[in-house]
Length: 312
Image (cartoon, rainbow, N blue to C red; front, top):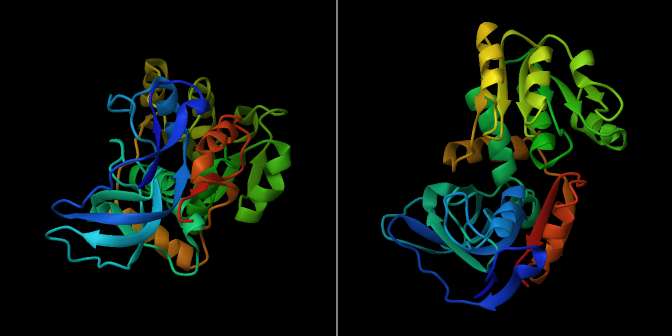
């Protein structure tokens, strides 16, 4: 099968197309023929350092998958060959989604939502699960709460806006002015241009902050939160000063790392099928142009998700 590999850490140019052996599904696993694979910041960060988050050297990249079940391993009863599925297999262990086939535990996938194609479906898993687990599982968002989403037009952010709205929240998003109309179209109630206004001065009485940026956004976000609120960081760099300040005000603060989640994927699929969640596609590249996809992602100026198409 064709797959993207790298033989050294470095820039996008280290990504190469190679012919490698097709995997076989093991116990409780499925083999999925990949039609499309999402591209995420964790991919180009892993490429640059030459290791996965778990320390595997020169990992095969990619976690977001949408495709068709090719074969099932022993013990799998929930899928059959021909079923369309999408998911985030094996994260944070290397999954190798930039390839024609992947294997993973069956419950790392869910049935692809009806009515969307594989490109749309491949854009969802990692980013949508990150938003879902941060807002629903961790922060336990409720109708009527005020939710502040940073980088609201990004891969995670634009899905978080929609998930929070689907839960009945009032949503404030930070983004450059050029992306405000896009965010209002997704349902954002307020949009703050962080390049012109200090969000900490205009966002007030917030119940939940979802922060994929970290740095000084942590302490500044505390200023927006009411006592007893929740600060969810998507990066592990929440400082002790932020945690101490949060504790004094009864604010729950910490970071969350996304994990494979069959139940969460089913919830996401249901929102998609109900017309309440969609992935914005920034750009699409063929598998052979994975390096160009990474170059695009590393501009940090994307709106929504980048996707690789795999099936010719």
